[in-house]
Amino acid sequence: MRTVFSFMKPYKLAAIVAFCLMLVELAVELLLPFFLGKMIDDGVMNSDLNNIIMWGSIMIGLALFSFVSGLINSFYASHASWGFAHDIRERLFRKVQEFSFANLNRYPTSRLMTLFTNDVRQIQNTIFMGLRIMAKAPLICVGGVIMAFVVNPRLAVIFLITVPLLVVFLLWVLKKASNMFNRVQKSIDNVNRVMQENLAGMRLIKAFFRRNHEEVRFTDANTNLRDTTRKTFRFIEASMPVLLFVMNLSIITILWFGNSQSLAGTTEVGDIVAIVNYAMRVAMSISMFSFIIMSFSRTKASAERISEVLEEEIDLLDHEDASTTQQVVNGKIEFKNVSFQYPTSDEPVLTNISFTVNPGEKLAIIGATGSGKSSLLQLIPRLYDVTAGEILIDHKPIASYKLETLRNSIGYVPQNPLLFSGPIIENISWGKDNATDEEILQAARDAQIHDTIMELPNQYQTQIGQKGVNLSGGQKQRISISRALIRKPRILMLDDSTSALDLATEARLLQAIQDDLNTMLIITQKISTAMNADRILLLNQGRILQIGTHEELLKDSSLYQAIVTSQFGKEYPHVH
Image (cartoon, rainbow, N blue to C red):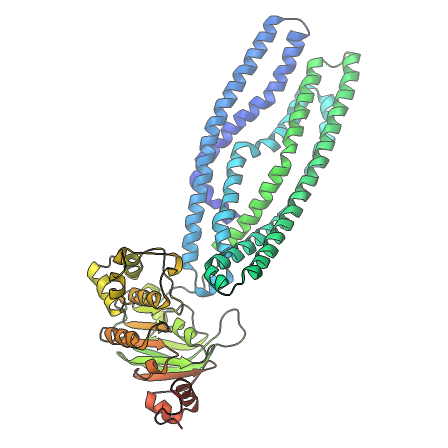
């Protein structure tokens, strides 16, 4: 929590001003019953109009002063709370941008979205209300007891019995409610996750007519949120009758003993009225404690969740000895006895991988689903670090390069192309800062998407829907490829990124980009694509079975022969 509230430092002055103005309101609220008692004793009981006017004028003046203080307090409280929310969202966003793939695996998108919205807003509202009115409640309780002792210590003794009991009770409620609100926030995460998956996959849901199934999933998550929230709020609300019962009992006791003392002539009527007023104000403040407990419990839960992300250790950074000047020049890649397993897995994905890709060479990688093809590519730009072994580029360990330098030298097109909402031209230029119009056009031509774009009504200004929903699979893949080509990478990695292209378009694309590249690695399931590569790496269950040309594998590998047969039939030459 300390990490989260450290973001209040730039707004310390605004918070102090708001708090001081709140103290002014508090002081006025505590003085008014005292002056009311004076007006009754000195004015009403003695029929002295001058004293009534004097004390009444003072009370009206103080009320107006308190009103102005409240207005200014709201301004500074808003400034502090909104500034805090802005800064912590900025820091959260930068932190998530720094996350490695391993870090991101620990935090689902739905949870991060809840952090950026619900959790930050909860803390922001608590800060505002804390500076505006919430801090007044405990201070009124303390101040009311003190002023009651100033007015009449004998009657005020009753507060010494009731208030400590209520404090202990409230601390217990606060502790229990905090744990309950943690469960509420997790339920919100779950609802967000189901909603996000449904909205992203709406077309698939309709195609498979799985509406009823998804409605059941959402109903289960939504019902769990409702039940968890209801249980938590019922617990908070159940504490209110206890608080009010004790305080009302205190007021009745004050009136009972006050009446006895008044009849005996030992206590003034004004003192009884003042103390009853203080008791009423304390009771009203205590009635706010359910709201305060709820707010602070939710804020504590939200602050802990945000702190967890902000304090998350980034497990993939530039090495201390990484060179600031070292660049990828030729694009030669060497794997030396590389093994890798995901942080959350007990089984290795890749085992003892060794091979070399020479500058300008095109290596095709084929293998069954789950054989580790994508994982192999992700190790080259250090999206993950190897578990064992070493990867070298241009004879230098990849850890000796700055991450920015290494990744700027690589064009990576993932298996599932991700396009952003906005015009096509921005999606292509996203791959390179300050890309010129000519670079954008050339990248589109090389990716074989230029002609298709020119046929659209708004051409390069055509708006792309979320994740490219208004484009075909092949169009999305080619735009994604053009985004990688625009940076003119030394190494291009295509993770099954031409699967939606017809053979002719794919052939033109690969031919167009081959001339400008030093090294290309392409994961593919198409033998027609693999056979045009310089060499083919055959991967199976995380191990290299064989590496060689199409003809060599066709001659020596029974698995490769089986793959060729499945795609071309037994009539294919040299398949036995």
